View 1 (tube, rainbow, N blue to C red):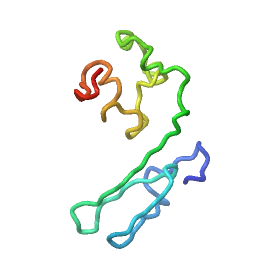
View 2: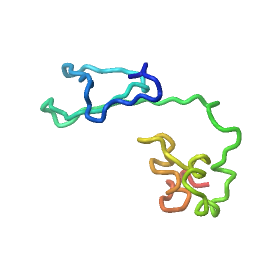
View 3: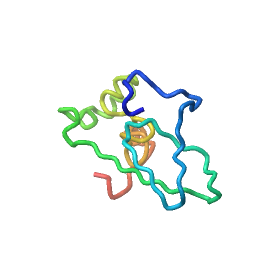
Length: 119
C-alpha cells in the first residue's frame, strides 16, 4: 500500500490484509506510509509492546507560526477549517498534539500544561 496512489485506500473490511505472524521476540519494521493496523492479540500473552519513532524535518512548516501570532480570544470565532490551517488540529491518531491532547483544549484552558511548561 505504500506504493499506491494518494486516491487509493484499503478496503474497510480488511480484504487483502497480510498478517505479520512471527515467533516471540521478533520485530516487524515498515515505513509509516504503509497502510497498517493491529489485530487481536491471539498469542496467549497479556500484552504486546510496540515502538514507534516519528521524525519531521524542521523546515517542513509554515513561514509564520500562526498558533503564536493568533490571539487566543479570536479562536472561538474561527471555523474548523481556519483553525486547522492555523495549526489547531491533529492528524489522526496523534500528530500535532499539545501535551498529549488536542491543541485547542490547551489553547482554551480546558487542559492545563504541566507546570514546567508554563511560560
